[in-house]
Length: 383
Image 1 (cartoon, rainbow, N blue to C red):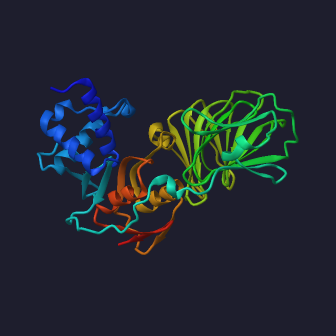
Image 2 (image 1 turned 120 degrees about the vertical axis):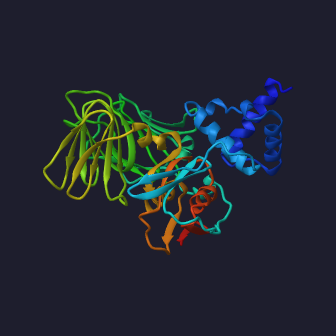
Image 3 (image 1 turned 135 degrees about the vertical axis):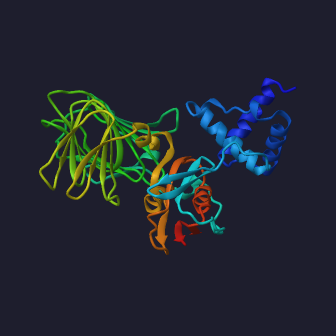
């Protein structure tokens, strides 16, 4: 008979195996437990809070397939735009293939390196006088009394300007840049909290002394803006300005993306395109998509937009090129294409950014329509 200590041990093994981190010996131990006690005794740790049933089903499906039992999941053919959509459950990623032919075996050629080994750069602060501070080394530096840089309990780097910071010339702009694979929390002088995603930059004054509080973003960030009805907060990107009084919203404006996307979580924002005369006001749960000459507004699931803050990729019928751009930002790689674009090959699902790059590429390659070759930081996409 199993006891609580034993059950907790196998819950931990189950979580490790689900993320692809089990050794061969641990995998055998886990399967023996499954054979002895059956699937009714399989639960996951609280770290999967909110998705226990979903991940438990994926776990059991993987185990059943591995040991040749009857699978928990069955294959479904779903009609989609007059084509069959085959949904495969592989790890925590659902792969949609709008194909009717059978899957061909394709060998994946890749190095077995882990996520963090690819990240060689660090977040930096470029001060208005041109001085560059490596934020990871801030503890070794003599910083002004109104500036604090530290790691929080989760290990996230935090940059904070004291609210009582001495007024400075608003033309003097500081800039924070994050490298691939690193996010950062920035507290501005008005108390606004900014979650800066990987491969992004934020320009801001030491204090907001003008009629508005304007910052400049390249990349992606989530803003929790301190309310001030007399001084609007403005996020300026290459092709738009987002104006708010006090709200929570996400802006995705990477230079290598065709569209800028602003998603409102709480409050109200107004989108001002820079290249044509049209604006739009969002309500919570809406997303503004700004192209070259088009501004459209749609309803979205905010949880999907904010998956990056939880350390996940979330793909929603997303094409391969878009996915590879996301992998570039997280793993610090350079992607080279030696195959033609395939608009029919799309992917949907959620997968942890803590998994190794190799394991993610392997999942993608199991569609049979794409393979990868990895050399150092270069990933070649092959047919």
